[in-house]
Length: 170
Image 1 (cartoon, helix red, strand yellow):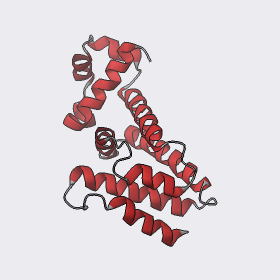
Image 2 (tube, helix red, strand yellow):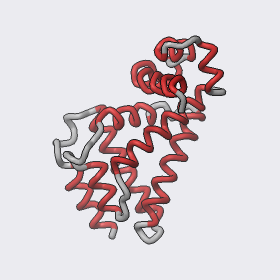
Image 3 (cartoon, one colour):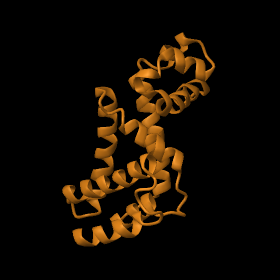
Image 4 (cartoon, rainbow, N blue to C red):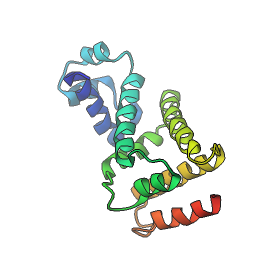
């Protein structure tokens, strides 16, 4: 990605949690990126395309943190255990994007990413799509509670609890 494209994607990542998808206008994106508004459309055909680039970058960041997991336990540990290079800002941004899924273009991008994760996880669970979806729901639930209601889940309890839940699935 070019520096200007990166700056536009960065701007959406900064503005989305603050203003929401609707509030992150191309004018505000341009201002935050330090460019003229017309350049936003030069680099991206639509705001949805910027969001897609943001989600892809975020997914790559999360995937890098999750590593080359092979088993469901690996994914759960990487996604929920403290002290494994957790990136609170990436999780908070992902939760903010999930909150904007009422927009069809946001919904489509998130659905593709979650589908990719479900398929990858199901391969490690003998093709059990339902169990894979349940584990993703567990992870996303913990992430959302951790960001929006941090006092609800006792610190350090997500991974041990999810591991016990996983034991009931396998």
